[in-house]
Amino acid sequence: MGPPGAGKGTQVKILSKMLGVPSMSTGDVLRAEVASGSELGRLAKSYMDRGELVPDEVVIKIVEKWLREGKAREGFILDGFPRNVRQARELDEMLKREGVELTAAIYLDVPEEEVVRRLSGRLSCKRCGAVYHVQFNPPREDLKCDACGGELYQREDDREEVVRQRFRVYVESTRPVLDYYESTGKLLVVNGLGTIEEVSKRIADGLRGMAHSR
Ligand code: AP5
Ligand code: MG
Ligand code: ZN
Image: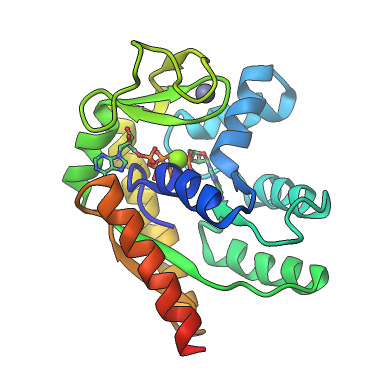
């Protein structure tokens, strides 16, 4: 968890490789729906372009379907879900049904001004969802994804006024989820400032610390 541009996607890719477990970003799945032109995609787009949350029913179904496909049996990472307390409660129910328990809710703490700075230079891969930054994490070749060769583009919701709205929505709806996980002792707060490598190391150290204290 964390505000828009906190580095969730960037860190999830790294952690997923490190732990050898699959990951899923509700934002990436929604963007794929938008790109496909499906009815669901059209509905989602009307919220995403304004920086609002897509209705809970829609995203909960996406997560449910992904978990049911069974890829996540040996562990998994969710990126951008849950985003409000209702989604957090639903996730608990889903996991109970699957017979698994959440290890940690990782929160990347990054202030608003840094978020705006990061998102104004972000490039995202159309094909695999990998993210780059023109300055902080440039691709080897201009506008081409290092990982899959896909085309890089700027997300429509990365315009400054939409970023600020996404940040407001985050403060209002997603911050309360932090208290939800704090109360169950699952919250891992990580300072999201510094280089990508520094943040990865903090996450890995934090997870090890949690494993030891259990
Ligand atoms: P989503 O796609 O999840 O967007 P977000 O939460 O706004 O987060 P971002 O993807 O913008 O940022 P990130 O934290 O992944 O950062 P990144 O690693 O890319 O959601 C989009 C929309 O979908 C929502 O607004 C909503 O409408 C809908 N949605 C999704 N999930 C939903 C849900 N559960 N419920 C309802 N609606 C939902 O990094 C950002 C940039 O910074 C990159 O350029 C990167 O290279 C760079 N960077 C990363 N780390 C560093 C660093 N340490 N130093 C310098 N630069 C860095
Ligand atoms: Mg992301
Ligand atoms: Zn790619």
